[in-house]
Image 1 (cartoon, rainbow, N blue to C red):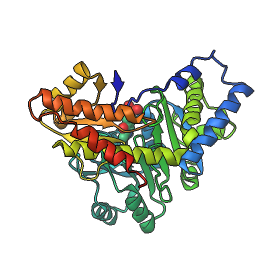
Image 2: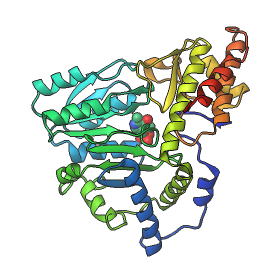
Image 3: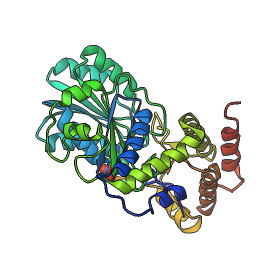
Amino acid sequence: MLLFTPGPTPVPEAVRQAMATPTLHHRTPEFEAIFKEARERLMNVFGMDECVILASSGTGAMQSCVLNLCKKKALTINAGKFGERFGKIVTAMGKELVELKYEWNTPASLDDVKNSLETDSDIDSIFIQVSESAGGLRHPVEEIASYVKSVNPKIMVIADGITAVGVENIDVSHIDALVAGSQKAFMLPPGLAMIGLSSHAVDVIGEGVDYYFNLASEIKKQQKNTTAYTAPTTLIIGLNAIFDEMEKEGFDALYSNTKTRAKATQGALEAIGFKIYPSTPALSMSTVIDEDAEPIRKLLKGKYGVNIAGGQDHLKGKIFRINQMGLIPVNESAWVINAIEMALSDLGRRTFDGTASRVFNEIYYKKGA
Ligand SMILES: *Cc1c(COP(=O)(O)O)cnc(C)c1O
């Protein structure tokens, strides 16, 4: 079965092997050397001044950013499940909330953000997804971040990059915290959350708040290549192993391959009559809105050996999402698109003629030409 859900993503064989080694004690020079290596490589991918690794799912990192970087009132962008989650966390942590809500195919508007900041001077932080996975949407994060900083550099900009870090080069010039998670573009099992931080964010964190999610105590320890509590040693070994794989061709190649694959998939889907759901598609996944989304997913899983994701809430049964994150062999993506065309034929919607594969290959192999 090909796992083509936009998280979790498949774990490559070399990474699984690396994680199958005997357990190390975490308070040892051996593990500290491994941690140091992972931390330096992570800092390089984030392109930021500081980073923190947490043993939690991605939501733990989102919560720790709310706790440590929002003092009073947060502005959140809700264009899907994950943006909605930021709002719920803010409320659960007892902070004030202003939420901008959008349909799940619609990116946040800069004008709305401007309006909120102009009318409410208590807002001290803004929380937004780079790629909102609920509808496969890309928000104009860089533009919004740059505007926010031009109005008031003290306002913290927190970007959830869980389906964007490792997918594309994100301009972090105006971002204070960028969140990543292990089970998406990093092709690791779930359980590791990572945050890139600006030096301004480190200042704002100060002494930190909370106990487990106190970013100040983690930063202090992690600067010494250790962790406040027991480190997820296996996953950190895995992180170095996936970096080994990704660095073989380098991150520029990874970003460029991901982009070309996403464009080729989108072109192929459109060529066989599908409609792409988001108005600004993220590169992390290809999202189609279609009334046969569920029958197509069932055929893919039962007949063609491909597992893709559906939709949630009001989009349940209405969309399907194909993963583009990670080191994906291009022949697998080509098979997925071909299987979708065959499923359309099974449903009697279209006579199979190989259009999807042809268009996929044309777009993919024209890259750089
Ligand atoms: C997967 C995901 C998360 C984190 O979810 P966890 O289940 O807590 O790991 C957060 N934001 C986005 C955009 C995601 O896709």
